[in-house]
Image (cartoon, rainbow, N blue to C red; front, side):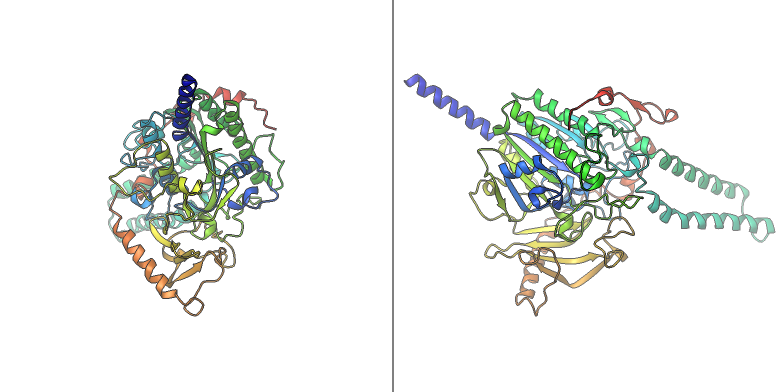
Length: 581
């Protein structure tokens, strides 16, 4: 009897250890709208597997991305810190990395959850999109690469999925390049021609050698620019396994199936070891794609096909957990890096952006449509099933949540802006620890959210708003995304004030006449801004023009430029047949 009791106690202790150090699967969509999922009210797209996470877990209805753009949002997600703290928020117009051969990226000094979990014995993998830089000074130093930030295994893209990566899908650069370069080229051309005429007429003596140098530099610059954009797909759209390029340029054939297969294999390799899997989907960022089993099957064109293919992939991951009896030992989280890109329209006029439900705006904006994202968490038997939580939470909260579950220590030498979600998820508390959330547009403080402890209100103060184009639209269609400063925005003094608990659509700004505590609310929020600003310290700007620009010496190439950097070692990807219907 005593032996039996001893064995029961031992087994309980073992189960307790397993519960305390769960496996962690983080599923992140790209540019998915909160209104694209059945569990958030969509009735036309089929997302049964993602909806299953909601049914068996917790749905966060006020889950906020730390930024409405890919690069800063993902930096915040991995570090639990506002991107302004790590230099991953831009002061320039461009707020994300565009080239594989840029020198900026997530600094090595930053501590990611993958680093901390790896130290606690977790197997760690990133599969899919990274978008946080690769090299610093040479084409193989990999200072910003996922393997330098705590991941044991990487299979995916170091940059992102662009329209330019898929032939026939148009270009995200062409319009901007044309606008930016036409006038400088015209000025340069007119200047050189004028100098040549003045020289010929003898009105001004210009050294022929200097004129020749100017022409040569101009010609070389144009040639490099034309070469780069002509070969953009080959230079920037490639698939890597760890540090090796295995497919250049990227092939979209069975791409989701390949990413899913890699995820499933990683789980299968680590059934007896705690693991962290970050499956970062390329769906539904443009260029949109879907395999033949999903193409043309949804009610919303290619965008809907991509959403439903991603949902299939989520189902495959959940099924493999069931197969190996890992469901009860695994925390699964699903989100999007920011809201849907509402301005995405194909050259043929097809809508290629998602649906943000009732919320205003979208990607690149701090209106709710740009930052309110899906937040689903499932851990059977540990967190509530079928529960809805309407408290403000952040994608930065995942960092302290999983670090504590892995029994690792939170860094004590820096501010962590996220908060542990477990007390909220388990129903031990009913209020979020986030009294304030700060919403940045690149490096500019755009808005602040305040959820007072003694009130159900969620106040949101907006200091500036993007100028929509056309004016009566819901986005910046003329420029493809909204920008954060200068003539692209309208400053508000006093700032706009909304109560999101009563006006989640941000339709009617409050005034001193309609809100008796108007000035008191502004006073409290301005004080919070002052406290927050004092907590910031100068750091190198990872998204400066110098760090953003393409540097030829950082360019990776799996063959040679003469061969257009072509290779395809991902033979399984070409042959893979996955029954996904």
